[in-house]
Image 1 (cartoon, rainbow, N blue to C red):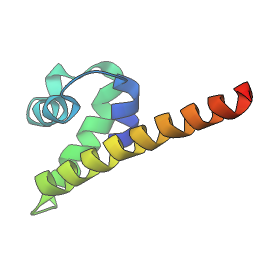
Image 2: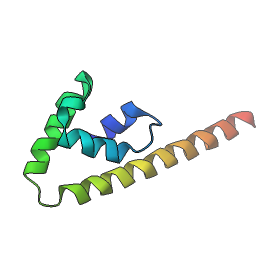
Image 3: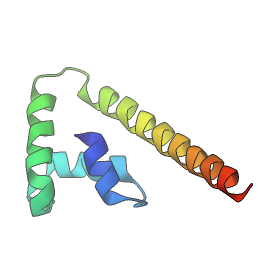
Image 4: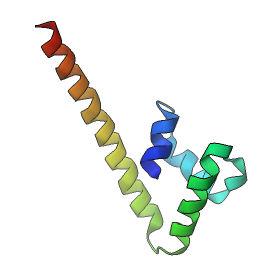
Length: 81
């Protein structure tokens, strides 16, 4: 769910902070984000260390994006040869 939200936001800065704000105040989320945010709220209620897990997922997402960019650069380099 977090990846889906982050991918939708693209290059937006401060994704984790924004997501934490939306979890605290879901009324500020867009119509498309509401269902995902409400699912995360349910998970937060049932998890003692939700915030630390969310930070770990956010870090994993950033690594995923970097690897994706590296793969794209590699593919483009092979196409130019």
